[in-house]
Amino acid sequence: MSKILGLIPARFASTRLPGKPIRFIGDKPMIQHTYESASKSIYLDKLVVLTDDIRIYNAVKNFGGEVELTPDSLQSGTDRCAYYSEKFPEFDIVVNIQGDEPFIAREVIDKTIKPLLQIEEIKISTAATYFKDLELVNNPSFPKVVIDHQGFAVYFSRSPIPYFQSDEFEKKFIRHIGLYVYRRDALLKITKLPQTALEKIEKLEQLRMIENGFKIKVEIFDYEPVSVDTEDDLILANKYWTEKIRNRNIE
Image (spheres, rainbow, N blue to C red):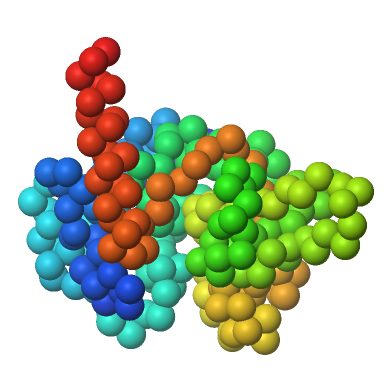
């Protein structure tokens, strides 16, 4: 039986929204929303926030979550996940949950984990959804992905892909959701590889995996992520939370 480790990398120094994990949505810091959402997963045996900042560390301690300080020198959330999971060989699957997805659905986490539980050859899986608002397709903040007939990623890009040269086809674009599930050995290998050309061009680290021959299984959901990256996103997240509380009270 696989043991599964859930990790939430969270850093303070976000360029567009400094202190993002401890900015409030309703009466809770965002990192608490993310932690509570992720803890609903039926598969995670352990859930830990990984941070390089004592303010985030204290915030997680205050609500009773599990948290560890990681070195400032680590460059990315993936690196933090590898650093922590290297110390725990008893976990053979590692789930990297984005700290800025405060309302991530349990079903998204669990269904993205499932391919690794069912098929030994699958080393990495991730999540995606179809764009409902096509105006967002041109926004580079929302990475796009194209997949093959078996559901594996062909390419990720900040540009709209594929390019529709005619109106013969219905325009459909797939939005990547930044949730990753790794076999622990694959995660440790990936983070020891140097950055690749396409990764540097697009600033998407999943391209390092593809360029080095790792196949990424993409699970597609009918789901609208509430991601927080800017002040405007935070306002929308607060509106979403207020509406959710209101609906809960009506029920």
